[in-house]
Image 1: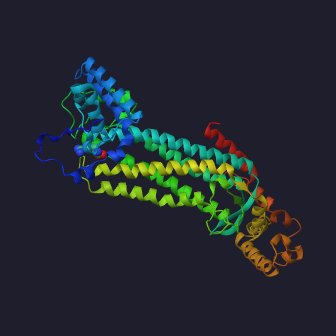
Image 2: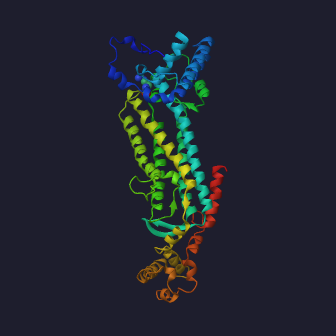
Length: 462
Ligand code: ARG
């Protein structure tokens, strides 16, 4: 393929573009990833122009055939992108004109690259958002499976990273599931604002041709059109919103990562990640490192950084389009690649974890995790909660000095702090009794986890 000699806008210029400036201002190195959407948008635009009588049926036929050929060349890897043609829009148009001659030059009637690029991004993002939702749901499905399998597996729940109360592993997995449910809802809501068509407003003010924007929207499957031409070409809120959803997803994955890293340490030993998701050390032969969660935790900062980049990109811009906007793509693409990759690796990794029930149980037995249950026991027998808190505090102090768990103390030792403590106390001091007693909507009881799994499956449509 020969290099084109002319840019489409050289008419008013007398000097050629500085070579460095040409490369500096070009976006083809990264916006080429939107090419399929650029062509899709062009097809719809040409059809609309024909419907309103701006193009003839023959011209439309030539343009559609030409676009098909350009697309086939791209798929076959036959296209060499040209920096001189700046961006994906001018590259495609130039290839089209190479193929079908002057008719190709008519495609740009009644549009500008300003509305074209805004349309391409939205088309591209629609697909990406759907793919990301699919990955989130795959991870959710893995979590629901784990919740079902380990609905009554006991581990310590933490506050301040100190043992607090016993919980069930299934309940913990469903906490993660809930976070992702909100992520899906946010993405679906953002999708509505992405799914509005800017095309047709041309450079900024609209166009003098009798265009039918609703028809173009219908052809491209947009729910509606952007209603103000100035806003249509300059709005990038939808990209910022999306990146904000992505940041929350990454923040969630980062929190899961933190727990997985802790849990897989020798000190916790609650879970083991599969070998295929870990790496070794080049110097310490015994090591098996949780690189995947660590990397996901690390990538979170970068995705949040992209959100800040996009916000800063927009904050100083007057209406309407400014070249600044070209800087929206790299952060956006980077976010998409990283959030998709992180979700994929999590969805693949989670079903392959090994859960060490015995270590979890043993850890829950340490740290006086059932102290609150003892307090509740006294309250049930008529003691005010604050007094019960005091009695249990003293019992725990005593147990610490004796080097024992509450459940290991003889009744006489416990009863010295309150005569309300009798034989039946040992039922509430067991871990099983403790979790089973939290038997209400949202509680950790195995019976509740089972019901929550059923609700989760219904939500997932499976
Ligand atoms: N490559 C440009 C971008 O990504 C396309 C729009 C250029 N428009 C212009 N008037 N220079 O934003």
